[in-house]
Image (tube, one colour):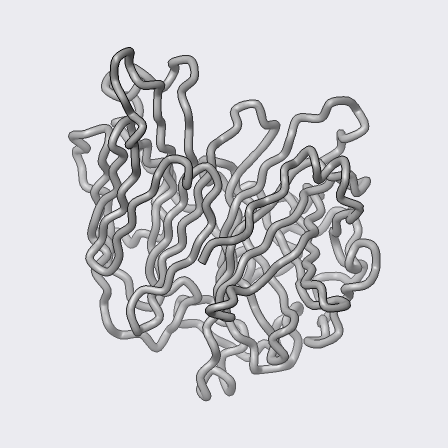
Length: 383
C-alpha cells in the first residue's frame, strides 16, 4: 500500500493555508470522548504549551521506550569508511519492522523471520535493532560483507525490526551502477527496491493469513536539513471508523528517542484531517503536526498520512508522512481489550486518560518520517 507523493516543502510553506496543531487545553488526565474530537478549531484544540514528560501518561512512557544502539563494527571498518565520506555520497535511512505490528497477545505460533538485507553497490550500517529479545534475536556477527546484514528473528505476539543507514557512493569511473538495488529477504516475505523507491517510501504489507505484517519506511537523508528522524506508535480507531487517536515516539535519524507525540484524526466536511503535537523527553514543546490521512481503496484497514510540521507560531517548517494499519477487534477484544500494548497486557480503556470509556477500539500501528528545513531567517525560528 503506497501513500500519495508528499507535497514539496517549499509549496507547503508558500501555499498551504493550514496551520498546525499542538497540545490540548485539556490536561492529559482529561478523558477525550470517543466521538467528540475537535476537528474544527484552528489548531484542533491544541496549544504550544509545554507538557509533563510523555504527556503525563505512564503507559506511553513505558510502551514507547528507546531501542538499543547496535555497535556495528562494520561502520568503523576500512571497508565501509573508505567511501562514506566521499563527495556526492548518498545516505538512505530505512526502518523495517516485521511481525504483529498491532500486537496480539493471543498469538502462540512462532514466525521465523531469519533473513538478510543487501545493497548491490554500497554499504549498510546497522544503527539499531528494534525489540530484539536477548538470546533469541540477533544480528549475525561478524559481518563479513559491508553490503549485507544477516539476522535471526522469531516473533509471536509482537514484532522485531532494524533501523539502517544505506550508504551509496558515486559509481567509480567506467562503472555502471544504474541497476543498484536493495533486497530484503526472509522466509515469510521478500522484496526488492530500487534506490529511487527508497527516496520516499512508506508502506505496510500484509503477510500470510495470521495477521503478520511488514512495515517499510525509507527516505533519502537530506544532509542540509536542520533535523529529521523517525516516528512510530499506536493508531487507535473508534467504532465509527471515522476518527481516533494516535500516540508514539519522536526519534532522530539514528533512532535516538527525542520525545513523544500525541494527536487525533477524523473526518471534517468530507475531508480527512489529523492534528497532533510533539514534545521532548522533558515535555518541552517541539512542534505542531497537521495534515490529511486516507485509507487504501483496496483495504480500508491500511492507510497513509502526510502533513506539515510547524513551530509554536504555527509557521510550517517541515514535513511528516507515513502509513498506518489497524486490525478489526474480535468479539473478545470488544469486551476486554481497549488499549492494547502488544505485549499481552490489556486493560479496559476506561482507565486510560486519553481513550475514554468505549471498549470497542480497533488497535493499530503507524510509522513514518519527519524532516525540518533550515530557516531562511528568524521568522521560522522557535521549533
